[in-house]
Length: 534
Ligand SMILES: Cc1cc2nc3c(=O)[nH]c(=O)nc-3n(C[C@H](O)[C@H](O)[C@H](O)COP(=O)(O)OP(=O)(O)OC[C@H]3O[C@@H](n4cnc5c(N)ncnc54)[C@H](O)[C@@H]3O)c2cc1C
Image (cartoon, rainbow, N blue to C red; front, side, top):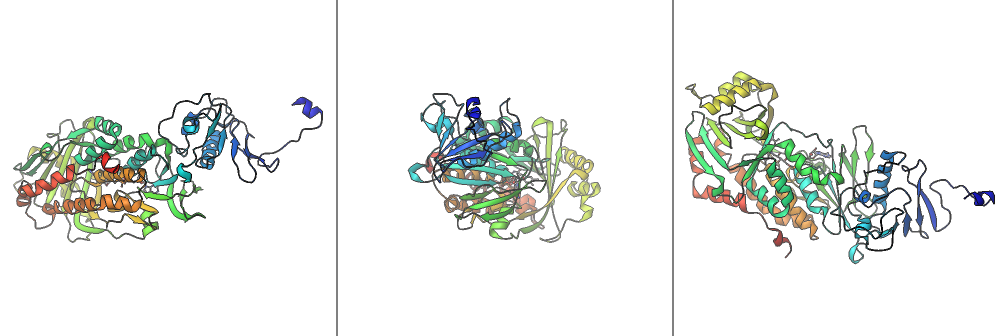
């Protein structure tokens, strides 16, 4: 360069300037404070020289990985993500200075905002260090799917779509990655969700099962200890269910999609871009707002109080069933006198409990309220009330109930309270541009432990439908008959908890062939992957 400068021919350019009709500089700070990329093409950019903003194909999948020599590693990660978001899906030639030659083998399914962008990986041998960003098949651009809420349904859907050809998937969650609402509770996930995971996402199935205790049995006793019902689940299911902590399920489901998920961003509004795609407005804790590129499909995986459902479909009116629900996690339960899933009735008040991995136990209670819409009375939140509720009039509670009553009385201030409720089913809105999954679509009563279970089924089936080019209405067609059945059956199975119902007769009726046939349908009726290829 020195001879050029000496000859007076050098022109100093700042970033973001055009050198000619064909050559533009664009700021890409990070590797150096004033690093820039070079865009080539008259009017429209057809190629872009990355310089030092990316050094390895790995960084296209994980833009957050910065190189040691970067002047500002955090800034370079942000720059890389923005750069990939801007240029992926466009068919532009990305001329990388540092990628190996020949290009490495195809990288596994995408992650990050640049999941769509498989640089040198799928680029083919365009030449040493040159990667063509995938031109959309058949001239069509890639479908962009944005998921709001990376809980159960959102994480499963995201993983199912990671490797789907022609689809870019990105997810957002309002909480930090390791924070979970209601994390102090246990979950039993039904055999049907485990079957769905086994068939469609076997690696996730194995990880979740390895971290859980098996749910293989369901028994119902009176608080006195009289047994009413005892069912080995193998009689009605092909797979065992599982028992685990909610926070653990989240951790396991979120792990494979961490690269495409941005945490700490809450959906607060939706806008539309110039071509009618939906743009979620996402707010960080400090009030900063992010508007990503528009999505062809926005998926609500944001749970029972879905902001996306409220924004796209209006307010939801839940229906209450006049039953109070309590949940308590007992961290130290080595002396717990039972293991697998049991229920105990004292009148219409019912305890439900099972052990969890790590020596913990989970106790859920339920008791009738004065009226369907009634609030939980303050006196219910006392140790004395909890003791009286589940202790038989004779005073002789069986060892299991006596153990639980002690734990409830001791932990009364840690109890999580709720009222039994459900929301009407809604699957789509915005002329098919919004799809609701899990609790956002169909919050249901928890009696058969199907909330998270159905959220998993939703994520898997929606993923299979979208991956083969279907839309929100197709997901509805695949799912809503089954969801309707599960909701009706869950409410029906709540019968013994309503005021005036006979828990003995109701529990004995669960041995009848009609109830068992419905359980079999519930636990096994899961579509196989090949059904989606027809
Ligand atoms: C105490 C308790 C016990 C339960 N026990 C069982 C059980 O034993 N078995 C069972 O199958 N089900 C159970 N359920 C129900 C089950 O937890 C839910 O049905 C299930 O979690 C629904 O999954 P989802 O993916 O729809 O939503 P969630 O798992 O609730 O995930 C929603 C996600 O969206 C995020 N989010 C919310 N709002 C926003 C926003 N505005 N912007 C961005 N992100 C947002 C949240 O942070 C969260 O990560 C229980 C529920 C509770 C409360």
